[in-house]
Structures are given as structure tokens and as C-alpha cells.
Length: 234
Image (cartoon, one colour):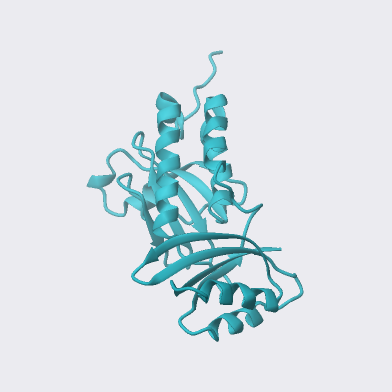
């Protein structure tokens, strides 16, 4: 199976190689490394690895913990193949080619791009700012195939992209479309040990860029998301 392993490590020569060797000795076959952050002498890297299903992840965690200065921020199962640099552009091209199903295309694809479990487009009431407990009023305009019913939505407001950790233990990233009160919600479930890492600022920025671009492509079609169907005339 594919696993995503997020590691914070000292940004100095040799440490990355030491992490890679430890993963190999533990049984992990590294297929991709993505640098999420390099700041203040520290780096945050996402490793996508092929992991033997019968092996215990604890062996990997123990090996990484033994490396000075290395911290494992999360280990979780990845969906689909590792992401590539052209996948975002390809997704937006699909949205543009079939705008009628553009929102559905975006929602179904985003979990795979961000190693998440599910995604939904939440519809927040126009008067959300005047309400208390606005999150409870949000409805689902479209949900990906793995989304629970009903999905546990956090308190979402259509203002800015951000990461949230919910009381139920899930990590969530939200990004507004900028119209019709629509917000894309992407979640990683955190059941089990080890658990998934929270969404990094780099991932939130990527989600926000995808949503903004899709909003430009879809335009007025976004106003139809979550709208009640028009009854056919007799």
C-alpha cells in the first residue's frame, strides 16, 4: 500500500539521506519526496512510500525517531498514485472541458491530489455573518465518493482558505470559491495510530489556487450548486 510520511528534519547535508536509508531498512520503498517547507534551519518533507502490508509501521517510526533532530508529524494511507507537477493543470483543463460537471470533477479529484480521505462543497447561507452557529446551517452541494453521510463539517465561513482541526479528530482544509457562499472542504481522518498530519500551509495554498481558478472557469454555474431543482411543468 502507499503511505504518506511527513517528517520534520534538520536542513543540513546528510540528514535527508539518513532518513531515506532508515526508511529503506525499515521496508519502505520511496517513490516521491516533496519539500513543503525550508525555514530556520528546518525542513518539512512529505515522503510517499510503498509499504509492505504485513509490516508494522512502528518499526519505521522507531527508526526515524532514533535520528537526531528528526520528528515524524504524521503517517497515513495515500489514495492513488503520487502527485505530479502537471496534475493541477490537467484537472483544471477537465473542468474547463466539461463545465456542467466541473464542480463534481474538482471535488472528486482533490482528495487524491492532497492525500486526503474525502471532500465536499459546502453551501454557507448568504446571511451567515448574522447567525450564531453558522456551521450548523451549512449544507452539502456535492460530496466525493468517500465522504461520510452526513459529513462532519467544521465551522466554515466563505472568507479565506485555512486549515482546521475538528473536535472529532479530523484535519480539514477549506477554501472559498468567492461566490454563492461555496466553500470546498477537504478532510483527512485521524483514526488510528499513527495518524495523518494536519494540512500544511503549502497544501492550503495549493487548494486555494485550484478553487480560485475553477471559480473563474465556472463563473455563473457556481450559483446553481445546491440550488433546489426546478420542477418540471405538467
